[in-house]
Image (cartoon, rainbow, N blue to C red; front, side, top):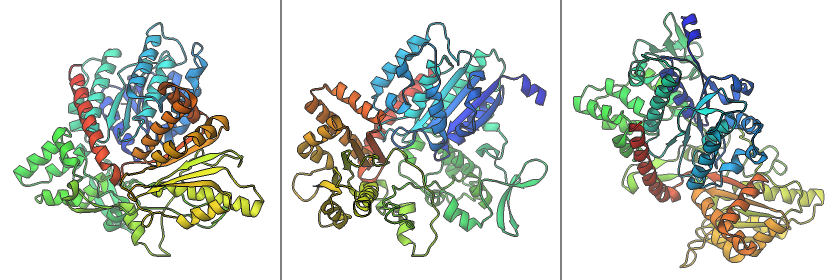
Length: 589
């Protein structure tokens, strides 16, 4: 068996992930390619990039985190990949992936991709000239830089001489991601078989349906998984052929502890899990409905958008009898929730402050069941002295400049003011305890009503009076007939000041809040730069790209919030259209 695998073409599958989704898809891709190749799955931060030029076939599955960034376990790979040199490449091509892609529109990216492809159409040279590759990106069009990291990896591999085996695949979490990945995996497998002259390979669909590994939904069986009781507590064990071994996915705990603290029971079940539930349902009509949803196509996406939780799914399909071991093995792990730290360690050395809006809403457009934010509601319920499990995810570029004389403009409506509270606490400490001169900082804060949700009002005013802020500007969207937002304050009151701070004094702009606000602010900043600097909008966009490259335009962006749900619904409609177009293209291959 080992000798047979050694004769097969080696395939390296790299993934970068924040939530585990890319890892799951990378493993599925491995299952597909294992029928005819010798694949190996590795996380990006565990891969030695020195091996890159020796790869035969490289497949990458990568998500994009936040505002176009790589996942944390992909950061080092991104830096090293961009730093690799090609003897014929201009210096500009080695700029950071962020500067190259995060300010590009969809049309701009297509044009850039075409220009790279034209240059690679000639005789391929470079360090990766012998490498074939394919990339699949995961992202959300609710964010401004959709699949930016995957796009950066894909074009950079080609710039370095690699041969693209299959076109870049992209899956939107808002609609059709699983279906698009299946199509991309099928096309990639077929292209690889043709490229390496492999005939008679097992059909991909047959392989994924018949894979008997207990790590995949198709491999579930009551005889391969069980819950056992040990001295420390119960643990999940799986049958690996010879003996029962503990499953590393979960630590020893009770089923109740796992469902309460470790597993995600609120997100809509995946198509794979629905297929499993179908095999455990005794009602023919319910079973057929589960099978249909488990195909992961249009009907599933429409059903998923209502956001049914696991409990609601079991209520909808009451003839389903689910063993506890199946839930422990196949429910997704509960993912961490990220909040900006809203305190300064100089001021509060033994404390960590958060600014959290407690989420509560009714699903299905307000007519469905009441939903609570998983983490925000839990934080709202805990008592002083309770243990909170957390860790720090560093954001080394989102910090104040070392020189306190550099002007800074801070834009943070609502809970977006969180990191700026740490900023003003730092500057206030430096003024009071280190004799620092007053700082040229401007704060732009927004909320609905001045008398209801202007959080930290007293602290802001005290910081202003102590010289931390030269000005505190507020935008109350509901205090008057005409709504006023933070971007309106920038345009109407701070245009000259913003341009002078960024252009003449080489200052910094910080933006924190939800994705819709950040996009609106970016457009207004572009308009201000164009008007004040005598630039075209295109030139102003390039100027913003330069600010980001110099780390003088900083963004800390939240995902979808209740206020952006309407916007996301419109984006999802666009995603649905693109999904169907991609399906049509995949069907014609």
